[in-house]
Image: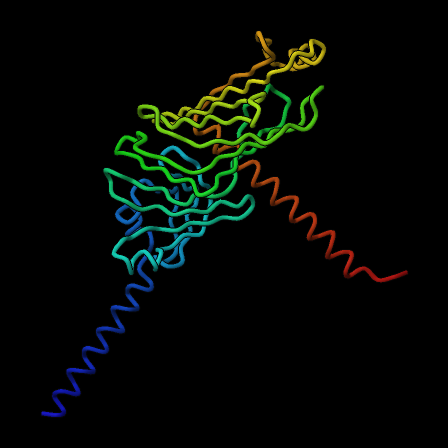
Length: 268
């Protein structure tokens, strides 16, 4: 009888170990769609705890190449979500919910956006704990958080102040109105289902000479200053995001190589 009990316990232990190993090494691609609907990638690698997403996106939002895995803390509370994180530039968050109410939570990081006239560098959007709920057709159900925009220096104006604001749903689209505290700089962003975005930057300024300079580089004069409007598709954002990450990677490699040469160089 004792021998039978020992065999039973050994069998249970073996099954438990086998199950634990199965869960530990279960491929992330087998559960990604069910656990994090809306989070997709061109390629999914690794296990559910330590995986990688290549060419990731959430709905129409580009994420890029990220490390990803299940959030253990959420599992303990009866929920399931996938955390993701990348470096250069930093972007992190988690995705979960259901197919009818897909959640992108705690999105924090940076995204370049080319909205200024040709020849000027892109602006940088920064997200701080941004939350977005999307429906089946990528329509906006709810959103919250803080978004800021850093703009490059402009001729005649110099360094521009940071614009900030919060997103909200407008029908199916996500709208993000940003402004400086005095309202002299405003930036209205919109992302519609299907991956189309639009942006409009308005600058209040009464210096006619500066207005003329900004007109010469592509801005349009208005009754109280200048304005520029642009639009595009999500593919534009992905291409720009990839280019910026590649440039950062090149700069990092160059700096590391220069530092290495400095450390190993022998005095003459």
